[in-house]
Structures are given as structure tokens and as C-alpha cells.
Image (cartoon, rainbow, N blue to C red; front, top):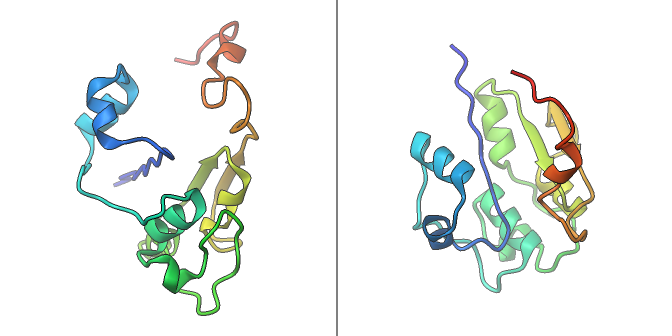
Length: 137
């Protein structure tokens, strides 16, 4: 039986903001899935070190990335993608900030989609581009 796992990470989003903001899609995912308000990343809160720490379950002192500039790990260790692949899961990655491409090892993903929109005015909300399109049923 196919049982998908969707891991959603939103950079800079405080967990308690989801409960007070009007975020029906995130609320729906939370209602149907597993979630926690107790998870913590690292300080200082810098995007790439935080994401690498979450994906590899180690602090920056272990993975070696302390800024938003990626450096290969001197002592590589498996991450979430590697663990999922060991369980015969197909892994895809959708992201909009290019340095995040290094969260997984080369050739570990079945599909990757990058949209360079993190610095645009609309940023994550590019639905305005597709309003004229018919939605598939």
C-alpha cells in the first residue's frame, strides 16, 4: 500500500502563527498528519544551518555549515532523504531558495523542482499566475 509522507518546512514561520493565522491548507495538513510544536532547530536562526540540522539531526558543529553558504561535510552522514530511501520511499523536493538543493546528496531524489521566487515580491504566493488556468479535477 502506498503511504506518502509529506514533510513541510517553512523558513521563519513560528509554529504558533499557524493556529492564529488564516492558513486553511496548513491547518488541513496538520489535522490529517503528524506535527509538533516542540521541535527546535539551532541558534542563531540562519536558514541553511537550521535546515541542514533538521535534515541530518546534528548541530552545525557536526555538519560544518554555519552560514548560508554551503560547504560539503568533512564527515558525511545520512539525512532524512537517505533514511527514506532505505525504506524504499521515492523522494521529491520542491523549493524556492537555491542553496537548499544541498540538503540531500546528489542523485538521491526521484524528482526536484526549483522555482527562483524567494526574493520576488509575490514570493511564495504565485497563484496569481494560474488564476486563468482550469484546475484539474
